[in-house]
Image 1: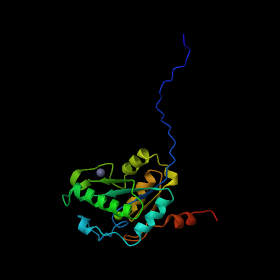
Image 2 (image 1 turned 60 degrees about the vertical axis):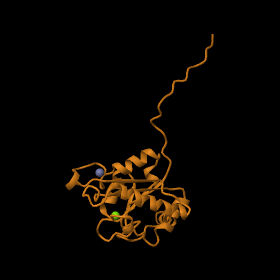
Image 3 (image 1 turned 45 degrees about the horizontal axis):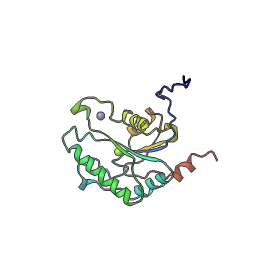
Image 4 (image 1 turned 60 degrees about the horizontal axis):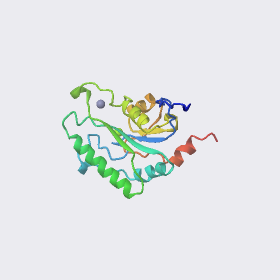
Length: 183
Ligand SMILES: [Mg+2]
Ligand SMILES: [Zn+2]
């Protein structure tokens, strides 16, 4: 009779989170925000330095994840399929530059049109979802956005949030790490 031990599979609820991520708002950070919604691919104009900046983070091992409010969907200004088309186009541009965006998360709701939701920034649900899906360590990660609500969204998930001017520039990873190093 064998006395071999039986291995009972156990669900590990303490999977170490060791990935780092660059979370980015979209409108006013990646593409030019004219102050209204970006309703179509024709209106999607990538800002001058963002591709190079994103690539520095990618090459430093950060997952790049977009977190964007698209309340224009709830308002009926454009369909979710147009948002998907914009994101596919952006991903194609990134791949052509030698890097990729890991995932895109958007909130299609608007409180005045579709009621309250938990995913719209400043809520943290979308960033929390990404953190779980990709085993991201919030403390190793950063989010750039052009609104106070982007910073609040990040902070709600334990991520450092940095506000930049609308249509301004994010930091490269080198600038970021230099700016926050002890020396
Ligand atoms: Mg924005
Ligand atoms: Zn939502």
